[in-house]
Length: 77
Image 1 (cartoon, rainbow, N blue to C red):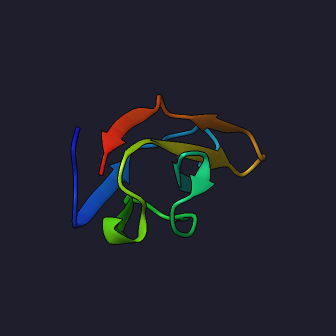
Image 2: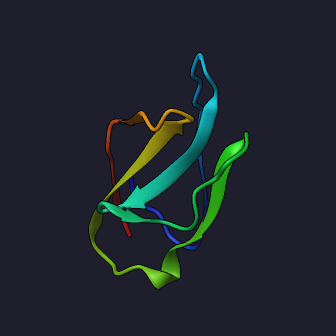
């Protein structure tokens, strides 16, 4: 997928003990602050990122500290 400008990024997350937060990551580095309440979403201004191919993931964390990552999405800026 090729994107530019301002992009809405969101994820769905559930856990039996509750979701403590979701951290979006671009190439493994945090993309904004962790979102600690649903809906788990951020607005990403892509002009702050370099042109080229990147991977985007979301990592959900529960109150016990367990976490899981979404499959990576490949994007091109």
